[in-house]
Length: 406
Image (cartoon, rainbow, N blue to C red):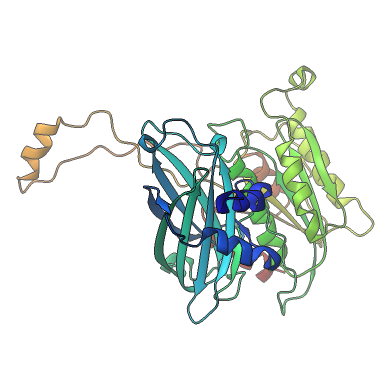
């Protein structure tokens, strides 16, 4: 059996995920990707994806291979990638993936094959081998330095230095982090909605951000108990509830968000214009009703599309004396909007040589940004606090504030 065929059989079950090669298969996989006599080269370029901290406080890094289509007279079935990541003064870890044609974005002139992994702080050497289904090979090498940026220095990194992990859409929380603060009874309520008010559908990156933020909250807040609720304010329904949440349940949270209806609303909901207000009020009252309620209730999610609170008295006015409410509200960084009335190119060049700067009109701003939505208003009535975040560093700061106010 050809060497590439053996590698294909080994990796078929890996789909597009970059998975650590099990020790039992490592020798065979390495042998199948090693240079051999008569090996035919495959033209490709690789662009390393620089490491960046995600909302679970882990560094994501990876690569993008670009393979010219001109090398193929007919479309290939798949590509296999073997990546060897060697930390400074350490031993390599091998990750493998198989990307079928259907999962490789196709541009006019090239195929794109992507992969990713999680790294702890440190220096790494990365060797990557791309093999197509016609036994042709492209080899690339690059170095990576993983270190927090200035703005991320306050983020509590979840992994020790020189750690290598698979990149997964769900990171199971590690609750072994030591913490000197008094433990809390925590309730986390996730508002399942798209992270951009311009979209209705909850995308894959949105689901990852929910799972990552939930992981960070569970890992870095001292808890004696955790309950998790996933709700849709737009659908006015709970889609998940775990009164005694365990770290392994986080995959169920991601699945619940993925199956939340998004593109349509039951017509019966439209008959009650205050239905979303009443639903939110009921959700809050349920958190205050148990015999042993949570002492810390945390809403998390993107800015809600709703801004009203209904008639006075619809929402609970004051929380129980020993219950604190927080709303960690995500807003994306606002990208600059280029004004429509820019001078023509020739005019810009002319002014560039002049000592007088060009006067550019101020950029328009979304008037809803930073304004209290319905959850912010409800939390304020409960003597709680809303913290608007845009980045993992700001999530880490919000967690410290929640813990510090205990």
